[in-house]
Length: 179
Image 1 (cartoon, rainbow, N blue to C red):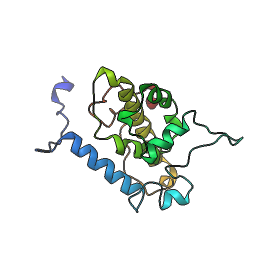
Image 2 (cartoon, one colour):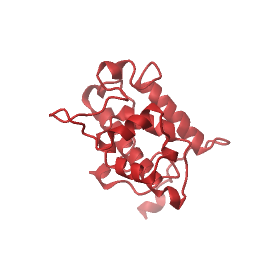
Image 3 (cartoon, rainbow, N blue to C red):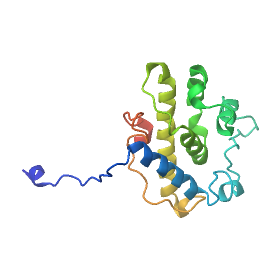
Image 4 (cartoon, rainbow, N blue to C red):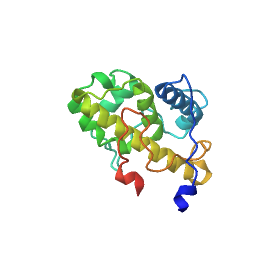
């Protein structure tokens, strides 16, 4: 009986605007918000030593990423994700957890127009879904960190377990995001 009295949640409707357009504009605005100059890796993020081309290292100085060269080429624009070999994309997926929020956002900004549900691009779809999950997790951690982390607070974090950013890559939330 109590459930019958509860009102349905309010939903926003944006007529004549596609979800893809909203996603693209949101990612662009978020990139500008993370860095005042409009380029991730310049300004406050670069001053903190977190550029898009700066990759994590282990204590002994060796690369923390197994596929650093792939990410270097991807982030520099030498290669586009949609034309990368499935084996390279699959191998790089496990290294996503080591990337910074700025690097994940740069990858997502480059691939926001790449939508496919084709079986021939399953590795690419899984990669983008992982990018979305790691990005949401790192944004939430940054928003919840005392003092807002190394950049101004971005506002309320997305709810943990929210679907990935892209409608085409919407799947169940990753279990580690919910922990």
